[in-house]
Image (cartoon, rainbow, N blue to C red; front, side, top):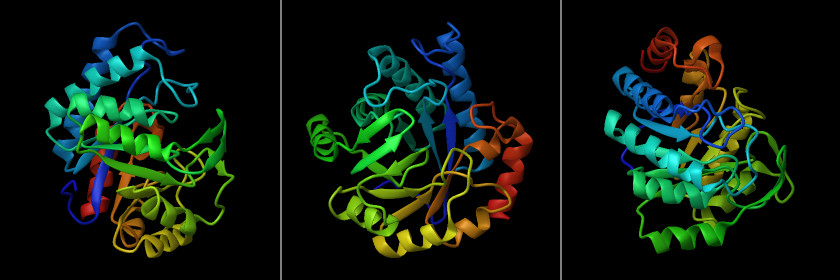
Length: 260
């Protein structure tokens, strides 16, 4: 298990568009350098971990990303690991746990985030089915000591399998062998429901629960009372918008609110 403090603060490194994406700029070195710089800013501010995500690759592929995405993300993750020295996670959007495991195992990361680990969800990319068994077996084949953090009722999606969020979380732990569960709001930047969070934490007992969207300087204390840590991205960026560059003033304000 990754050793994180109680009430962990986990910062997002949103990658700019990678090769092959619709918004690709043509300068991979700048994408890598920005990711490394931002991870170091997060470390210096006091964050406990970072997650690297191909947020700039909209519109996302539903499941399997292309080889150049894997190659580029591996370089980015290696750079972040080397720059910040914190535990690093990987999320390959929209839902490619196999690419995430490969990138993490080669790049030196410690965990992956899987948006749909179990069940079936209707999303803006179409129907996405969890591939639990294949994901766990692939991790075993790689011989990788990587944690799997699974979203429950993930944002930008509607569950078709288990509408009760507490039961869905219980299944992720018991049947899906997830190492942690993530509760988010309905879309990026929107807050998670406090009642949902309380029910999920009760359902998974001593297993870790993170809040995965909508965490701000104004609500972080309330969330930390109900979970084991928060994953924050949008509130740290210029204008509070996911995908923008980090804003040092917003980072400082968030840390003061969270740790003050």
